Amino acid sequence: MDFKRIEITDRARVVELLAHSGFRGCEYTFGNNFVWRNFYNVEIAFEEGFYFCKFGRENDVKFSYPAGRCSSADGSMKRAVELLGEYCREKGTKLVISANGEVTRQLLELYPDSKAEYSRDTSDYIYLAEDLAELKGKKYHSKRNHLNRFYENDWSFEPLTADNMAECMEMNERWCGENIDCEVISDADRSSKMDEQCIVLCSFKYFNELGYIGGVLRVDGKVQAFTFGEPSSEDCFVVHVEKALKDYQGAYTAINREFVKSLDGRYKYINREEDTGAENLRKAKLSYHPVFLEDKYFVEISC
Image 1 (tube, one colour):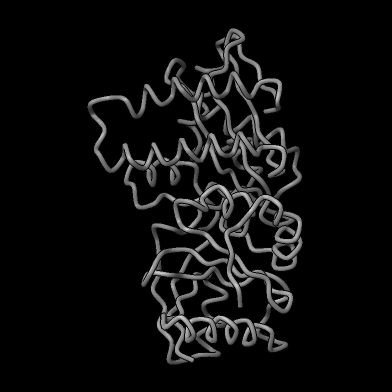
Image 2 (image 1 turned 45 degrees about the vertical axis):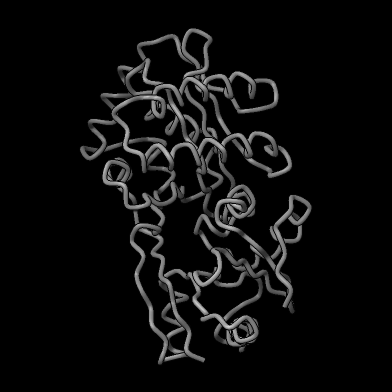
């Protein structure tokens, strides 16, 4: 099996194979694999109808569970793992697969001597789109208060397109000043946010080619927030990036709600990705009351 650097020209082939699997995890989107390619040394391979994605360096290499027509029922899951096992034996490295809970259970049934480690920090938060669009009930009372404050302004929402992308990039520079170029941030947080800004710029550069969908929030005609992402399955949309300035209370809540409303019921679920173990981010994501977590496991295969 030959792994290579992922390129934008691989998108059509990758998207087709991802669609067969229908996984909801953010790692099962081409955009996620592509824009993070330099940070996680992402490489891909195509073999026997499977899409393989490898990430990490040297002795800390992992593989996303292969996409394509891969199941435990017809033997294709075992074949996909065999191909990875052959590759790892050639390279002299262990086989570690990142998988969701259901696939992990199937892998452990096939390979009972394997070990599975739960990765809470990389588990994705999945919400009902209807909940985020309507924010009904007592559990969203504080969110509606934030929205009411924001809606007192002269605001508007529109799709993110080539016509307003330059304004979003300018807003992003202001966001960096508010969140990165300040004295109270830790070195680890600063490094993480700087990496994220590189991802935003890369995403803007390839926005149309990646097939991204986004939204922009204005107050008094000026961009105050933007967001964008892509679907991971027929019923799930993944929000990759969401940014808002601090000028107006409730801007984050508003861009979240208005963007989901703009999707017009096309997706049952919204994936707002993981919290990376950051306490404040975890608290914020839990405050929107996910319907479930897309659990992630690292399975070291003994085969």
